[in-house]
Image (tube, rainbow, N blue to C red; front, side, top):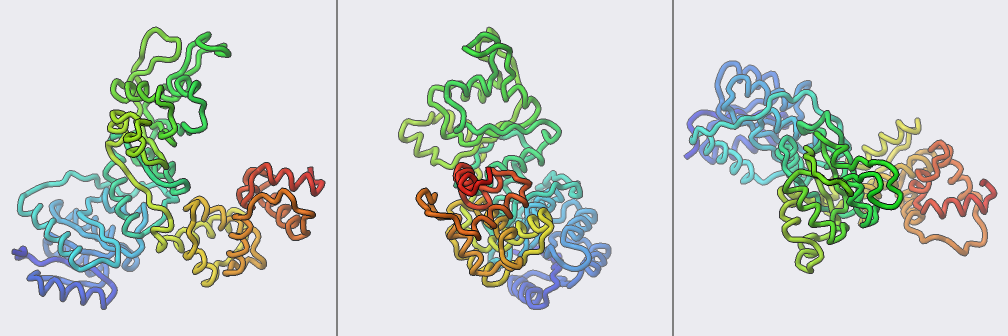
Length: 444
C-alpha cells in the first residue's frame, strides 16, 4: 500500500509533469507537483517529504540542488532523479549526493513506480544508507553518453570506484576501457597515488615478469642494474593491466599469486615484499571462453572478475553518437582554433555507421573532419569522403599522388605541429604509409 505522506515531484515540462502526477495519483499516491527549483525549495522548507522525484535540468539551478536541499531537510529522504541528458559527472554527483535512483529519459512509467516502491521498502524497513555528501569537486571526463546502458555503467562506476575491489573491464577495441580505468582511479581514495597502465599484449612474455615485478642486477642478460617493477612503482595507486587475455599461461599463475598475497618478488630476488596497489584489468577477448578452452586459468578469472563492467560497442548505443560527435567537434575546434560546423546531414550519416573502431574511430574521424572539411562545413558528403579514405587499403601501387592529397597531408601536418604519428591517425593511414607518401612527394 502506498505511503500516506505526499511525494514531491519537480518537473519543468508541463506535459511530463502532468503525465507523471496523473499516473502516480491513479496508483494511490498523493503528489505535490511543482515546475521550478524555487518552488521545490519552498516546499522542502515547509514540509518533510519521504520521497522526492526531480528532473536534473530545470532552470538556473538543477535537480542536484533539489537533491542537496532534500537531504538537508531530511537525511532519510529518498530522491529519484530523472534526465534525458545524463553524463558521467551528473550521475556520479547524484550518487555521491545520496540519490536513491537515477532514471534515464524516456523511461516506462512502471520503472518509476518500481523505484518508488523500492524507496518505500527501505523507508518502511528503516534502512539507512550511508552516502557521501561532497558532490562539488568532481573531475571532468570524456566519458560521454546518456543512453540507458551508459547510465547503468555510471551507476556501477559510482559504486565500485570508492572501494578497492578488483575490476575487469570488457569491451571491443576503442570503447574506452582505459578511460573507465582512469575514472575508477580518480574517483577512488587512491587519487593522489600513481596510475600506471600496462599493455600486456605488447610486452614479450619473457619480459612481462620483470616489467611488473621488477628485477635484480644480473638476473638476466642485459640487467645491468636493479629495476623497479610496475607494481612497486604504483604503490598506493592503481595498476591498469590492459589486454589481460594476452598474457602467457606460464605467467598467469604468478599474477594469481600476486593478487592473492599482494607481494612481489623481483626476478633474481631472494625475498618477497608487500605492495599496496589496486588492480584494474581490461580485455577485448572473451575470457570465459578462453577458460573453457584451457587457455586462461579459471582461478585467475575469478580473481579478476570481482566486479565486471562491459562497455557496449558504439553501434549498440547510437543515441550517444551525436553527443560524442559534438563533444569532439568542440574539442578540436578549440584545439586547432577552427570553427567547423556539423550539419544535420553529416550527423545523420555518422549515426548510421557501424563504427568497428567504436568511440576511438569516431574521435579520429571528427578530428580529421574538423581540419579538412571545405569551408569548415561537415556535411554528409564530407563524412562519406572521410570514411572512404580512412577505410581504404594502403595504396601501394598508385601511379601518382593528386595535388589535393598533398594539400591535405600538408594541412594536417601543419595542424599537428609536424607530429607524424598524430597526422597518420587523422588521415586514417598507417604511420609507415604516411612516410612513404612523404618520401614520394619529396618532403623528407
